[in-house]
Image (cartoon, rainbow, N blue to C red; front, side):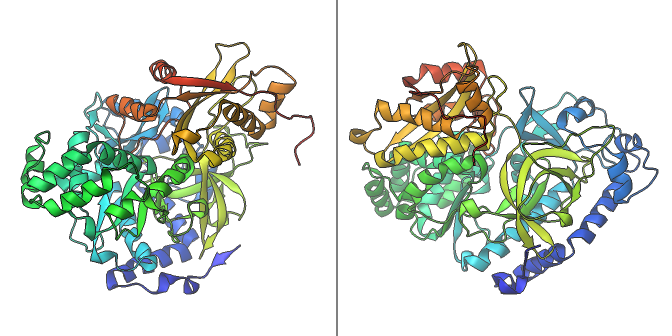
Length: 598
């Protein structure tokens, strides 16, 4: 296996003793990956031996891998739903965990149209906090001096809900921001934010965003990094600045807070931060009043060294727009996590987004892997669990589906993430996130997943380069027509309206997308006539902003919101179709023969 030597990397040159200890911990965990995994599984099985779930499989006190793999099945969320519903309804018996379930973490993934509920225990907060504590020691190796300034991070909470049994249900980041670990975190010069806790913890998204942006503008020269959770969240902040800069300038000029900010705790903390500064107000006016928003981030925050946002997976489509606003600042993706479990971190954060790899920390949970072959998928039977591959035994160049077992009581749970092994750091594998395993579009026998659709969008978008145009997109399988066909909704961001893509070019984009689809799709189009021509519907500018607002109004977390890659919900389709300004179809059928492509 390809093992990266720690000696050959900056990992051996920490800037302070605290960072040295964190980096040493990473070394210990990754050098002893298999032993740590064995220990973690033993701890999970010992503490949860008498839970209802594990007792079903008659482990009889065994804590070794062989017994676990032989007797305990691999499961999905739907398999666990009856037990999860019992916990949600108030059953406090030890179903999954010997420790009390402290709350539910709501996943961005859904089941039957509802957000998944992931049971968690109190100590998991400490485990998540430990992974957070490793991020800055690694980043500071590549970008020194981060203790000399602040981070402008747009962080938000969502008003939580309660299950019938009284347990709180909320997104994992809302849980973290409301925790004592976050609110009473000790001072760390590497983790100073411009946003006060009062703004982050404000449930009113306008007041929260306004205050965080105002503080970021006031402290503009201290900002060394700008970020949000997802790339879409940072772009939403830039859009907010475009729409509200005049009010923000008025506050800075006068030293008087906008009367729309009514939250008492925000008003109190801002009374200490906001002072009249006409010179700063004049500067911001000069930067924002024109039509040119290229490189607006380094223009307003000139000391910014990088943007800290997730741009892997579906978020990759936002990279060109981020580059436009940032002037091409680095886009490190620092960690890999989900509501079910926090997994690991990026040990080379300053690489290009397309080269981002995550190293799973073996102390975070017990990890197994299903070899992933899209042509011949491995059958999974609860009666005869397959022999999965352990973390230390993975092979470079192969794809795997992630399966986790956690201290909270999830046992051999399929997360659905597909990962590609790119190498090893010591004995720990390093992964590229490929996609969340799912099917987005299907009309007949065809099954198009997110990565295939993303690739088709990228190929078609190349035709738009000469028009200096980028796109946001979602899709829908329209089965109202006979035969059914794929509908791709595009919002075009045209830099020069005088040089917009023509009708003919957009028709050609449809065909390029179809040529990019898999052979089953193309066979349906060409030979079986079971799929109609692909259609692109161009929607008005601002439509995708409306989609986000709609999702948030229905309870989605602003932190976890991701533009849907496929929509079937009638109100969303009605919104999209009401915003259509033009429709375009493939002018011919794509190429297909019974033979495989080379």
